[in-house]
Amino acid sequence: MAVVSDKVSMSNMQIIRRRTSPVFDQGFRWASYGSALIVLAVLAGIIGTMVHGGWPAFKEFGFGFVTSSIWNVGADQYGAWVAIAGTLTSALIALVIGVPISIGIAIFLTQLCPSWLRRPVSTVIELLAAVPSIIYGMWGLFVFAPLFAKYVQVPLSNIVEGMPIIGTVLYARVPSGVGMMTAGIILAIMIIPFIASITRDMLDQIPTVLRESAYGIGCTTWEVVRHVLLPQAGVSIIGAIMLGLGRALGETMAVTFVIGNANRLSLSLFDPSSTIASRIANEFNEAAGLQMNALLALGCILFVVTFIVLALARLLISRVKTH
Amino acid sequence: MDTVLYNPAATVTAPAPWGRVRRSRYVADRALKVICTLFTLLGAFVLGWILLMLVVEGIGGLSPAVFTETTPGPGTAGGGIANAIVGSLILTVLGIVAATPIGVLAGTYLAEYGKTSMLATIIRFVNDILLAAPSILIGLFVYMLMVQPMGGYSGWAGGVALAIIAVPVIVRSTEDMLRLVPSSLREAGAALGAPMSTVIMKISWKAARAGMVTGVILATARIAGETAPLLFTALNNNFWFSPTLMGGVSNLPVTIYQFALAPYENWRELAWAGALIITLSILALSVVARLLLKKDKVR
Image (cartoon, rainbow over all chains, first blue to last red; front, side, top):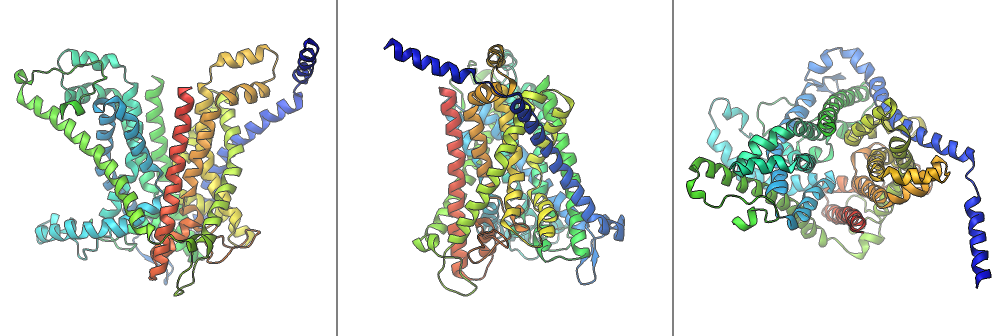
């Protein structure tokens, strides 16, 4: 037996003694370095393509490309304003609805939820982010929009009709359920998991002792949240909101289903409109010539805006983390 | 109600006698608790509603033909989505096979080589932006990069577009998981004379394996349902696609998109069946990924 085990350990030693060649070691280093550079190259490539492809449209229409609301394929006249306004409005609606809900969920998960329920509830909220956006689109168009038209748009239009300002903003000429407001609501649901999970992580990082001392001097849960937790997490919650905004700005398929895809500037939130992403999705495959350049220019604008928003988000979130 | 709302495990026991507390404080506190609970229920309710919708609408369309027959032409009865399912599998596998080595190596660079260097900081920043960048723009990018020069849509372009979406997910999770590996393990390896690459592959990767696999699974789940980047790259195809993957390659998300909005009853039924299949697969992948990570933590 002793002989056998000796043999085994001998062969093992030989395996161990086989050394990794320095060439492999260097090669591994360069491979990982190169892979990291690919990430940079992709971003540079996206920027380059958008600017290069959109340049003819920017040159043709100048600054008027951004401010003009004419999008006429027949006359080869393109202006981005309707799509830009649609993108910003729908994302804004999404934030107005989504942010309070997300923060509420984060507070529930960190402060109110019994510990055995935390994990399942967190998973459910995070699974909202895993549902493909096309499924949100189908849900929005076939399930939500009809209900929204019947129980919100029609009654609301009847009430506000004729009123100044509200009568325009909340009046649905064609109560089909499809339009800016529906897109905003769907987007709100889609960004909730992102904002909620980051806010939850940030609230978790706040030292328990702060919370305990606040409870110790007799604060209610509301006062602890309002005066201790939210100020402590402050900046990073804004970062989380910015991240949600970045997502909402670029969301494509769900919006394409429910926004109605009309190139019309309307003061009513219930009217169909379009966003940059939905217009690209609808038209790019059939586009040629200047129209394609105009769509790429739209993509360029979208990229610049989301880049700024996401960069801000990243800066705000990381600043708190390092402290 | 109280027992549900209060966290019994918390170290803080809330004051019981509300009688001596000003009414406005009591109301504000109650309102916060009720509203936060309702918001959470709303989130869970929406997920349940979407799943219920998929099951109710999709289960009727599920039949063996869905998995065996190709997508029907306009006005043709019957048909299935076999070509779309196979196409989606191919595109997803292509994407993840291309993305995994790049993502893992780039994540390794950030965690093991670059660390806090200027370049690593920039790449980390750029990666976070790509993580949330609009996926339709990635479709546009790959269209200009591959479809236009190659003179037509192809499954390869679709795979590259999906890979570009998957890479940042894998980079992020790989780096996060490698950072959790205690540096004493690496030092022990280095002290035995192991070169850097051996330390990384035999020690760091091994220790972080579960988390890295989770990252790859989550990336798979993420790209399996992506529609926007495929619109301009793999497009779609109502027949079996060419084995060289040149020309349009049928895939589930774009098929669902086209069929759901079509005027034909059987198309819409197939779209719902496809939606059910794809959503359940993706949710299953996400749950498996989570369980994998949890099991590792327990161990």
